[in-house]
Image (cartoon, rainbow, N blue to C red; front, side):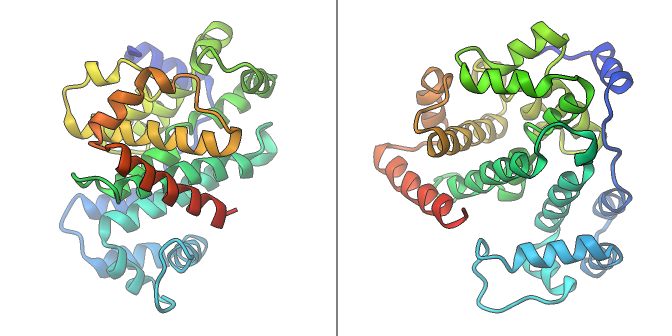
Length: 282
């Protein structure tokens, strides 16, 4: 388990270029923290032309499978609900937060992978006996590695470390990062998530998403289930891309399946749905 304290967070704040929380997200969070009204949420989103266009594009994509096109933000808010629309907007804003000209990491490819993990997490949720909020899973999928671009901006040669890791991933990436940089992308991602005021449970999963001890360390069933969902989604996407499981997968596989209450038949049905999504989306 990663231990975090104020000194670690202050070091991240001082040493990294962390995207500030966008004004539109602050306005949405302020609205949700009081007595939110659908029309006020819609007006906040509609006031930002780029964000509202992105929301409509996403909601009308094949992923949502709507029978008719939604062309108005108020319709989108009514269809998705307050939590879902805020999650969708937050994810869009995250993708816009990093400047490619300052980052040696190819951001389009990075966000494509994060988006696949986020969407596969939501597909997994559809197969569970105990429901998990898809908007939470989607945020975790998008944010779990969001510290990686900040690492690439901060450290010259960081992309070489990523390439070396892709060629030899037997040792977890965060261990290699700690050895070379005295910090890691999970800590940086945790700082970003907390500064954007994401729910505390989501922030904790982002911080611990490489920890195989999380199932024992957390006594929160919701946290453990979301963590299991993320690790399963990561592995399914990894298998689709590299034709082999993640190196750490076998150490946690049974705990993941037990936590999500997936038997062998459930797991096979799930894999078929994930494979169909990954083929159709690329």
